[in-house]
Image (cartoon, rainbow, N blue to C red; front, top):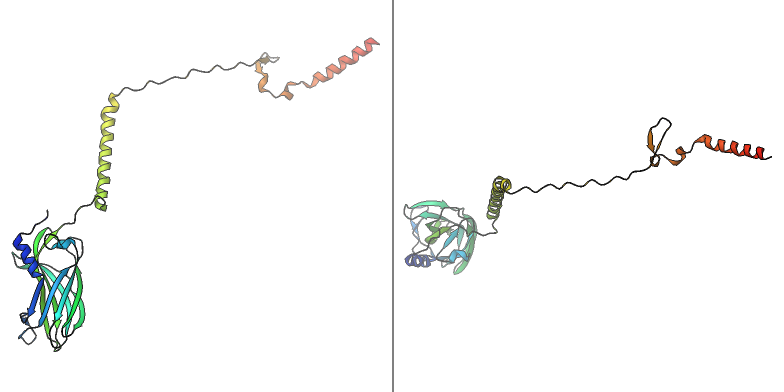
Length: 252
């Protein structure tokens, strides 16, 4: 849910970005007396998203600002820290205090300084009061706090993107759940109802019959399985030679 600022709220935001302190910064110094500094300060928001429809602070996205200070003091002043906080305007209490940035820069008479600073929010969507202040010190080591910004801001969530890693992980989970559900429905309903395909039986191929021989015992065997040199009997050659010799003697 995004919050839209009313026209009056936008006017307050515009007027709060540039606050002048010409003797109006009633700060208490160590001796208890108020100290007025002749300085002007303002805050510029660098983020383009932070300037749309008023000042928006996007959770998880660093908000970058530039704190500008212009000193009209006769003596140099030192910018010690820059910091800020978010305040609940209804309750008047600080919701979040941001980490202060140590600066330590000296600003002379009629000189200016642009000090960058950034902070990050992680809160629920709401409208709060943003306060940004500078901690200054004079040449007499007097500490003075000057408020540079005090205006309403909207805390919003970042816009969702389809390429966000969390969204991609969510898509994978949903895809797995849908796939599992579809497989369960198919195996439960469609697989049991759909007709099963008939099995085709292969026709046996005819086996060629090879001629077989029989042994003296009457057992049959196939000569194609026996090597050729085993089929030749060793006594056949000797009997043929003896038969030829007897034939020659009878002829004589």
